[in-house]
Length: 115
Image 1 (cartoon, rainbow, N blue to C red):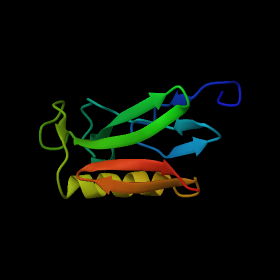
Image 2 (image 1 turned 180 degrees about the horizontal axis):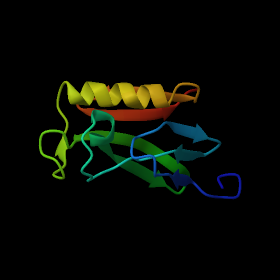
Image 3 (image 1 turned 30 degrees about the vertical axis):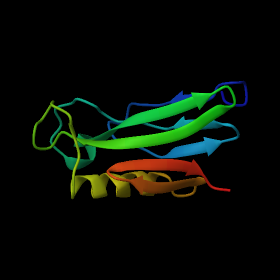
């Protein structure tokens, strides 16, 4: 789809976050997981808010704010430690093998294309 002109592909369905890949001049988010769901395991209740800044030239900034549903099921809250660190690990593992660099900015994760 990116080769045909799309800039962003947002996937979903496996109920958990998967990797994000910078591809050509686009971004593929393979799965954004659940935002509000009533499952009991940690992998399905650590989620995030994907924030994208776009310009005429394409993607300028990609951030993810970790969100937890563990202590308040079906009521999303910005994740704090240790959940934010666990979510970062999930994102890092999902991005292995992709040219995606992950930095932290407070609780948010900033994703960049590796040069």
